[in-house]
Length: 504
Image 1 (spheres, one colour):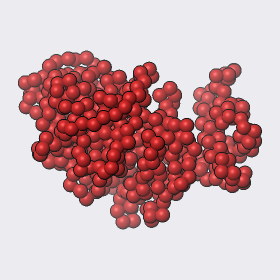
Image 2: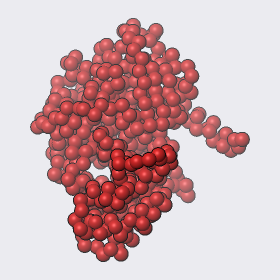
Image 3: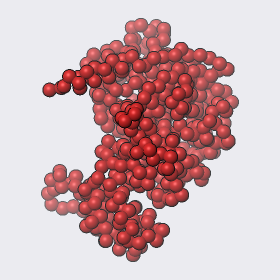
Image 4: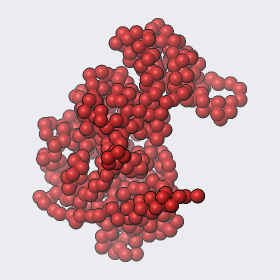
């Protein structure tokens, strides 16, 4: 039975969800198209709500994207849209669909490629009743399509059908844009979300139904001069404006210095190669030979493989859940891992030598539980190998190495991916630096820690979240808003490159 206190709290939350999406009217100045911003205090559920977008992007991706590597350029025309910042966890802005225009607040998401909003034909999902719904009968420019589709999330899905209509972004009107009318939103996450839908700015290669993305049509219809759009995300919680996306160029007021450009390595996501990661002056050793990463405006945190996220969170003092499996592996196999690495056995071969990662050679009948445990042991072993190897490179003693590894076991993130930190320690925490295009890009503690609650209820959340995407698409780093708030980013589809510069 639900208590009165719990029921009242839920009612209060639902009421808040209904009334907090307050809009400011667009304004136009020098071809910069703006949409207003509102903010509230952060809650842990809000980060969890925004994470569903991250999970969406890895569910239906083809694995055979062609590879690209190009040089760079810049643009001169600037068409801007001002973004809303929901608690540094969701950045969204207003678009219009149809004639006359029906307004929706959407995430401008570089990690997906479809546009979808709730449909007036969405009857059975509570989330649809808390958000505006597109009504095709009220639009003079609606074109029937009807092709059905489903987009699968890690904790739910949306289903619906395709329609076509004019889409207004700022003062730009994209004609005959294909989009999804969502008729089912199958997750509580959408109930918590402050956005109505999603506008994907990724490549068509990852578009569900092969629908042409909005950005492609902006270019093809001559609405922008250059094939460039750029993001500025404002992490100032007191500022009126939460950020801007500029279509067709960049706003020099929002960055300083020059952009570092890196080529898109795989067309689908805005994917690129990233170099080593440092905590303070110490290398994590994980990306010395490069890692795949995507620049993703639709993900609030900065997500990466559990192995290195545990290293980072341990170094900054964040705490997750103690993993008994992790400590068991260290206790039973730690000495053998040490000996094999000292003998110069390749790190990727160590866990196979120990018999913990040989699924293809298994014989006999195994229960589902046995297979699951085998998978966990393999993953933990591979993490332990990386941790031991990192310390071996700096000639640490065996005793100190295993003390460090056991501490990392205790710093593994919670199953949901978050790690918590003492708010009083922020000033003493190290910078975390990412090497991109051969240049260092550092995040200060003030930039990578998110605060929730007030007074005695205040909580600080690490901006580094564990997310293990399996091969062949993964492992993959997801460089989300924690990073993009510190650095102005340029997405150059004409030259297939990404630019990064310090934000102002």
